[in-house]
Amino acid sequence: MSLLSGLASLLFPPLCLSCGGDLANGQSVLCLRCERAISEKNYQGIINGVPFYTRLTYGLEISQLVLLAKEENNRAARKYLARRLACALTDSGGEIGAKIILIPAPSTRAATRARGFEHGLLLARSMRSELAYISRSERRAGVDLIIVQPLKLTRALQDQSLLNPAQRMANLQGAYRFDANFRALLEGERSSREGRVAERARLDLDVDLYLNGAADQKAHPAARRPYLVLVDDVMTSGATMGEGIRALRSAGFEPDIAILACVSPRLISQ
Ligand SMILES: [Zn+2]
Image 1 (cartoon, rainbow, N blue to C red):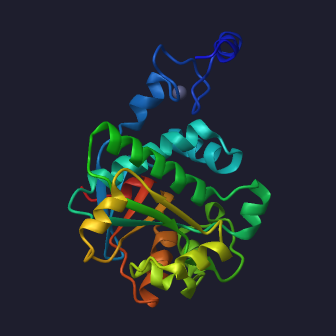
Image 2: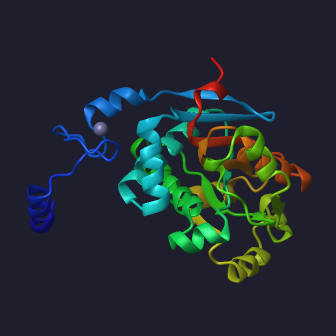
């Protein structure tokens, strides 16, 4: 800790991001009470035929963290959610191949403009950092992981949080389209075409190789198609995720898995 940040934490001791209560020694984000209320574990279920994994169920404490990350660009809250996203992906187990494509849910232009950042993209980037950290600390084999946003909004959307489940479904129906510029990438092609796509939409595409992912690809040129992972912060009604799955399928891509920071308990299989 630097002298300055040490001094700052003496003057302004960090508080629980959820309830604003005091943090015990060693706690950096949530107080003991909030942490106990959250009870993190490996949850799973199926949404529109696609298996999903999460570490958290949606509740008061988590909704506060999601709001901080989403509306206030709070880095500690985002990192907390991203770590759980990364853990949920590793929990999903199985052989996930040499290449993973993370597909974050798109935000509306209005929301991105009002916030000054794209929440889904930042969350996916933070998830990638946490995955790299987990890989290094557990000495796992590296994977080639890219973040791609092939889902685009076809129209303005109402704020889902103000709608009931039926209205959410109607609000999202046909709201996404698949951007064909990303077809080759999702099919596993990494060519100069990808460079051109990246050039054209630098924000849309974030390429990263971590650990020995690149070497793996060379050793196994016949790598299978990429593993498609839909990523979102919250799933309450399943309407947003359902629309993402629909839009990908309409373009001929079957998502392998969905990873959520938190999910409404009623959607989780017991
Ligand atoms: Zn608290």
